Image 1 (cartoon, rainbow, N blue to C red):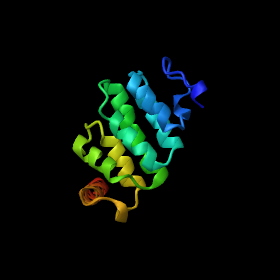
Image 2: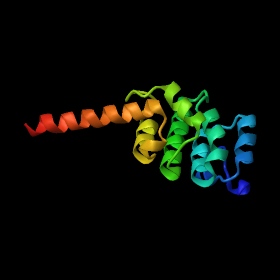
Image 3: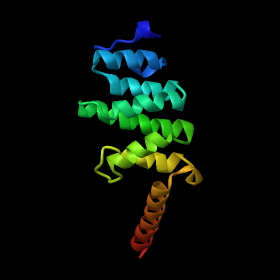
Length: 141
């Protein structure tokens, strides 16, 4: 698949399925690494994509970092779990709504079964549930 990847324009990068190609592009300092890491989340096993997602979360370009967090949310949706390293990276980024990791954390809380969540995320899930119920009750009055 490497022949169809255009690192300059970003075309075809959502179809990347070779972690070694991503690693080589990272070493070269290519521009669309965040986009490509979403492709890895779609097309590679979680254990292979996870270290690259974490590396992409540290890219200097804010937009590409945002795509890395999108990749983490995508991995949670597709696999129903994340690696301990990805959970740690999400926790470090911060769970707030304005955090770059906010949507990835929300996806994880939605698509990973409660019993598989780490303790800190279980607490957030319970708090979100209680807040939602409180809002529903308050609006019904």
